[in-house]
Each structure stands twice: as structure tokens, then as C-alpha cells.
Image 1 (cartoon, rainbow, N blue to C red):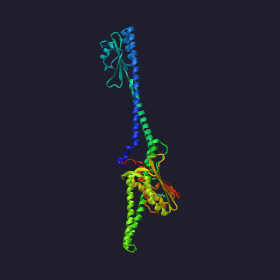
Image 2 (image 1 turned 90 degrees about the vertical axis):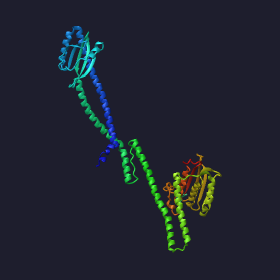
Image 3 (image 1 turned 180 degrees about the horizontal axis):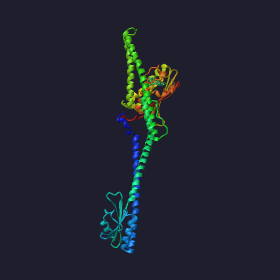
Length: 474
Ligand code: ADP
């Protein structure tokens, strides 16, 4: 395993979440312990100060009642009773000079804080200080207090209880800190894995899709809102991609199929011309070739026009168009064809309906719809063409082309606007499968659309909807 792979987990979201969780948890834990520590040590110090102040009061009482000699005796007795390594006493003049003390051999490092004595003599209350002696673990708490006129007591007490407490506290802190950190990391890891399991499922499916097929979907069990939404969005995206890929596949099949026939026919004509076995003249063969080439060119031009209109690249030449007039013209143009087929064509349009649009493109869209209606209806059929304002939105005009021809199956209906799509039953009829996609591209280019309703065997209704004013082109 390369070092990049070995350490790649360090970059994973699970690891980083776990680390954050562990660090934040530990910091909070340290903070809580710190406050607890400060609270406890302050409390201990307060208690020690209170007992030192009590001792000063006791000496003051002895001094007032019995005099300085009794104070000296009491101080000696006090230090011997508590232990000479625990407590010491000095009796000082107001000048800070000692005139009596307990056994100070253990406390020889401790001097007299004249500043504290000065403050005391000036009328302050007891003065406290804490000293750390070199080479000793335990600190010393010292109080200076006045017990009579010009007599000061310096009383010191070892803080060994505090040192013991802090030692135990440190051990407990480190142990619990370790246990808590471990728990935090495990819980954090578990939670991060759980939270990200949905994301993993999406990743797994994405990998399988790239390796196998597009029909797989991410399971969406109700887990966490966000992950569910990700899975649903991912699945919707897959639906769209699958549809697109299927569409492209179908389109390329259709292109191959539809371009193959004219090319094969042109080749056949060229072969015939070369072999000279046909009865047709060279002129006839050339004319046939030109006709096939024109058909091919027409298909290619239509494809280009659809692409340009779809992409909004084909600049529309917007002018005012009397759509009623255009429909009447188209009906007049197609009537002979319809009559030849034995079809009845009915046209119901108001005198004048003006909209803004590209005249040539609109003519082409309308012609495609009427041409289809004639092509896919057999005698004695009826084709009904109407134009009117939308009842709810008068800014819109609808052109309806209705026939009672072969109709379109439910399965084919969503595909009829795809490029090169032709329903199976229409393959025998001439056509390229581009007419409806061009009509829709033109309608959409004008800010409108073409829709279809159809029942197989009964007929179809195509609705071309156009706004009176097309949206401004970018
Ligand atoms: P085509 O050149 O084949 O007519 P279109 O894009 O115009 O191509 O139409 C696509 C397919 O939709 C047609 O091949 C046909 O099967 C179906 N279709 C279009 N119009 C009608 C209609 N009026 N009635 C039945 N089927 C239709």
C-alpha cells in the first residue's frame, strides 16, 4: 500500500469529524475541570485563612488577659502540639524585629516581610501571603496579625494538604481525561460513520453505475433528512441522465437508419449508371441522384435549424404576423393534397389575429403539423384547424390541428418530439422524423410550445401555443 493510500483516511470526513468531536469534547472537559480546580483550591485556601485568623484572635485574647509571656508560652505549645514542621510562630515588634519564636530550624529560609508588617501597623487587617520554598514540594501560607499595641504575630502553616489534594486531583484528571477522550473518539467515530453511511451508499451506487448500468438507484430509507434529500436528488439526476442517454441512443439509431436509406439509394443509382444495364437514361439517373441528395440535404439542414433554434442561436426575424392569414394560406396550399387523399379539411379562424414572430419559421411549424395530419389520416378522414386566443391568458394564441387518423400509442406519445423518432406504423410513410422536433424548437424559440393528445386508432390533436409578444432575445 502506498503511503498516499495508507494515510488517505486522515483526509476522510469521518476522521476529521471524529477529531473535531474529540478535541472539542476534551477542551470542554479541561475547562470544566479547571473551574472545579479553581473552586476547590480557593475553598481550601479560605478555610486555612479562617483557621489562621482564629489563631491570631486567640493570641490576641491571651495577650490582653495574661500578657506577652503567656503568649510566648502558648505559641510554643501550639507549635509543639501541631508539629514543628507544620507550623511556626514569630512575635515581632512593630518595627518588624523578632523578639520571640517557635523552633525555626526547619523554617530558617523564611524571613520577615517588613512591607506586610508596615501595612499592618498602619491600621490594616491581617495580611496573608503564600511562599514557595526552594527544594520543598509544599508551599507555606503565612499570616501577619496585630495582637496588642506594638506586638505582631507572624504565623506560618504548611499547605501539605493542598499539595496532597492537587496530586490526587491530577491523577483523577488524567485518568478520567483519558477515559473520556477515548469514549469521545469512539462515540464521535460511530456518529460520523452513521451520519455518513447515506453518503457512502450514494458513492457506492455512483461507482456501480459507472462500472455497470444506469438503471441502479440509491436506496432511500428514512434516515437523516439531509442524506435522504441527497439520495433523492441523486436519483432524480440519474433519471434525467438515463433518459438523456436513452434518448441519444435512440436518436443515433434513428439517424443511422434514416440516413442509411438515401445514401444506399444514391449508391444504387450510381452503380446502375456504371453498369449501364438499366433502361433509364443518364439524365434520369442523375435527376434521381439529385433528388435523393436534396432529400439528404434537406434532412441535414432541418437538423441544423433545430439545433440552432434549440440553442437560441438562430436569430428570429421578428415581424408582425397575421396568424389567421397564414393558416388560411397553408390550408389553401395543402387542400389539393387532402382532397386527393379523400380528406375533408375544415378551417375555423378569425379574420385577423396578430402576433409577433418569425414568419418563415412559423409557416414551417404550421406546415409540418398540417402535413402530418394529412399524412397520418386515411380517407374518409377529417382535419380540423382552428386558431383562437387563450381564454385565461389573452396574451397567448393557440393553433389546433386535429385529425381522426391513425393516432399515436401512449408508449410513443412522449417520444414524438424527439429528433428522428418515427412511430413504427409510420415507417412506411415518407418522412424524416424531424418535423415535430422542428415545430417544437420553433415554438419554444418564440416562448411557446407544441403539445399533443392522441388516442391510437382515433386521431390526434396538436396544439401550437404562441405568445403574442415573444420574449426578448439575448
Ligand atoms: P415525420 O417526418 O415522420 O412525419 P415528425 O417529426 O413530423 O416526422 O413526426 C414524428 C412521428 O410522429 C411520425 O413519424 C408519426 O409516427 C408521428 N405523428 C406525427 N404527427 C402525427 C399525426 N398527426 N397522427 C399520427 N401520428 C403522427
